[in-house]
Image 1 (tube, rainbow, N blue to C red):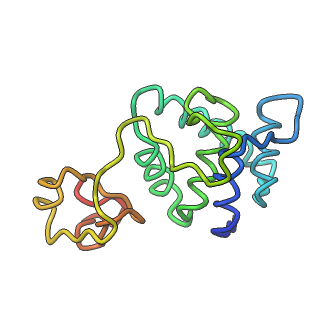
Image 2: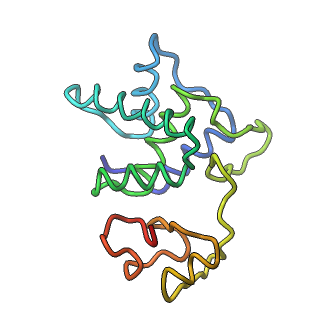
Image 3: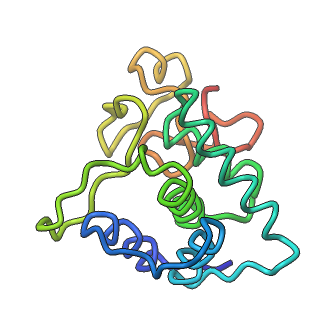
Amino acid sequence: MKLTLAAAAAVLTAAALSVPVAQAETPDERFFSLLASRGWTVEPEYRDGFVHNAHVNCEDLRLGYSWEQIRGAIMEHAPAATIENAELFLFASVTVYCPEFLPEQKPTNPTPVPVPEASAPKQAPKSSYYPNCAAARAAGVTPIYRGEPGYSSKLDRDGNGIACE
């Protein structure tokens, strides 16, 4: 399950350009076709679990969880997953099973769209540093997920990739 940053960017670029995924007969086939088109092959014995988790992602979005919260949960349950893997899995889940959560797309816009969220994005600057969770909470940026500005392992006591829970 190795995914390069370029492949992750291709996923987001495809969303921005409304590039269709190869048509398959069932939603599950489209889901695995989308993953495969980005270099991720899923062994048959894992397919049911992948489909189940894809539906869980959609249900979580319907319940109001943000894209970042769901991505963090994916990484927590699959510690070897990279942010790019989590983004690809979440993007494929939403594209196939709950496209109502895809951002509006402008086919003429060649730049990737920002990561979609169910709620307003955090306003932390890219060079954020918080000496403790109280400071992060005061800035209104908690929880902070691994890979986000302001994340520090010092603030992540249980090491699950989510600081200041």
